[in-house]
Image (cartoon, rainbow, N blue to C red; front, top):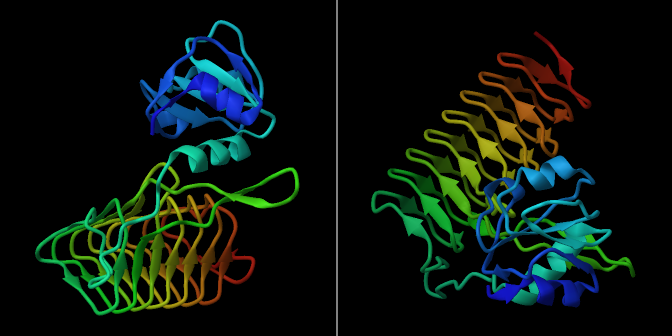
Length: 268
C-alpha cells in the first residue's frame, strides 16, 4: 500500500486536518505506527490520542494532536473504501494443493485432502488439519453505504494456530481484520465448527461439532464447548468453563462456570 493522507481525504470527499503524511500500511488503533492508517468509530479524543497511528479516520476533529485526522461521519465505511481501493488482499492459492505459498506451516503438521490455507496463516508443530477445512479465508465484515449496498472490509490479520492442535473436517477459521484469529496450543476442534475473525481460543480447549464463535470473542483455557453452541461477538469466556448443547451466549462467563440454554443460564 502506498498513498498519502490528502489522497485518502480526496477519495472520501472528507475533511483533512493536520500534516500531509505518507501511508504504507493499515492497522488497528492500538497497533499502529509510522505510516499507518487506522479508523476510530468512537467520537472520543482519548481513543485517537492514545494511538500511535500517523493517520486516523475519525468522526470528529480534535485540536492539538500529533496525528493527521480525516474526518468522516462513518469511519468504518470510509476505511472499507480506502482499503478496497489500495490493498490487494486475495490469497494466491496453489491450484494443486489449495495452500498459499505465503502460509507458514510446520514440517510436522499433517494436512488432509482438499484443505484450503490462505495467506498470512501460521500452523504449529504436530498440528492436524482434516479434510475440507478452510483456514484463513476472508471474514464476514461489511460496512453499509449511503445506498444501503454493502462494502467489504478487508481482513488482513491472518490466523495463528499453535502446536498439537486438531482441526476437524470442514471447519472454517477466518482471518481477523487487523489482528490475528488465534488457536492456542493443544486445542481440539471437531468438524463443521466456525471461528470468526479475531476470535481467540485458549490452550487445551475442546470445541464440538457445529459450534460457532463470533468475531472478537475470547474462549479461555481448558474449556469445553458442546455441539451447536453459539458465542456472540466480543464475549469473553473464562478458563475451565463448559458451554452446553445448543447454548447461546451473549454475555461474559466467569472462570469455572457451566452455562446452558438460549439465552444461557448459569448452572453452577
